[in-house]
Image 1 (cartoon, protein in one colour):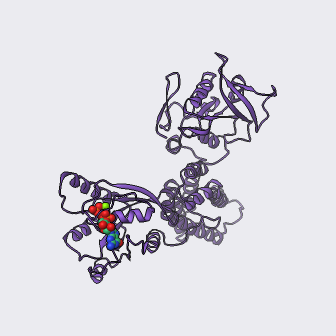
Image 2: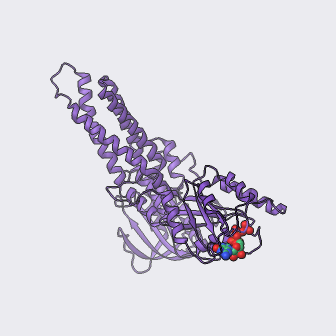
Image 3: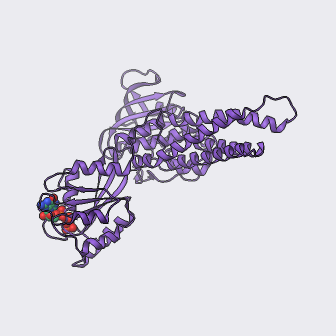
Length: 486
Ligand SMILES: Nc1nc2c(ncn2[C@@H]2O[C@H](COP(=O)(O)OP(=O)(O)OP(=O)(O)O)[C@@H](O)[C@H]2O)c(=O)[nH]1
Ligand SMILES: [Mg+2]
């Protein structure tokens, strides 16, 4: 993603760049779009994908079946060659599949050309497709069409990108929950109930003297209470959902020689960072992603913090401090075989206010640090004793990191929805506020107009969340995060 590619005729196309402003409205759906849907590089196969009414005619012009001239049968693979119509030369031996609308990803006709996964071949095939009248797809445009054509709603479209990016089993489960529409179903359920109540309230406002079924205030109150409570639960699931979806950044920090690089290596189970007995070994920040019970943790080994010996170390210390300041979480490392000293105390200042776990390392050596002192200084933080050298206490450390970030067992089930996306959380919070406010109005006997207004606002927030109420700006922001070809 985010790279530029050159077609073999020298035309530059952007991969992963943001939407350009000329291709946003649904009317553009009349155009047939095309892209390479597999990653750049060499691979067994690579796929060029088209969506739109020209997909089949373009395929017919370029594809020469090996055995017979039978027309494309929908959802069947056909074996043959892609031929350059100008020169008549074969370009690649391929499998091609036509999927007729509406049973397709975009609900439009789709053609996929499964080529050999070579850099040049794929670009050559894409170039031929574009020459026949397709246009280059924007990032996420296939999925955007699936949304605009009503196959999926906006939360499901967003789940597609989460699914592609999922780095652990749990983040995959959360994305899957959203893609299957569980979140949308809950929202639609709330919406249906609110619409029912609103209709009755508005009838009373508009025709006060008519004989209308009286408003069952008790039932309305009960429903509002239940829904408010539900939104609170979803909001509280957010922090945890976000941790699994986006992961966290975590800096290992401590003075020189305490064993920070040794810990990185033992957690990664590989000799990633250089370890020596010489203080000041690590200069630059070393970063690797680690899976801690389903949480993607971006772990950073940093230069030991002390008064730098030279300008390289000085830069290392500056970078270390910067990473510590930016990280979501800190592993503060102390050397158990040495007493606390002035370098340790300075570091304590650096990590003030940070979410953290305190690690006392070198537990295999005689203890010289005062654990009492450490406990007093960090009375609210978990303290774990380990030996990075002997690989002891590491599982315990992982569990401690996990429970510091997640306070209960997170499982994505139909009963236990997890809201992991900030846009959804904002919408749900808005709904919650409107419901709480109408509930208060109801209890205080405020006018029916006020209650109706709050319910209508909640309905708007729900509509925006699932994409019934569309804002181009929101759509662009969502789809520009996709890669081209999805
Ligand atoms: N006995 C013992 N030695 C350890 C342990 N962990 C690390 N060491 C040793 O301590 C020395 C320093 O380890 P490093 O991992 O390089 O320490 P560091 O904190 O990354 O050091 P800098 O990069 O210089 O800041 C090495 O000789 C390690 O073998 C441990 O648990 N027990
Ligand atoms: Mg180091």
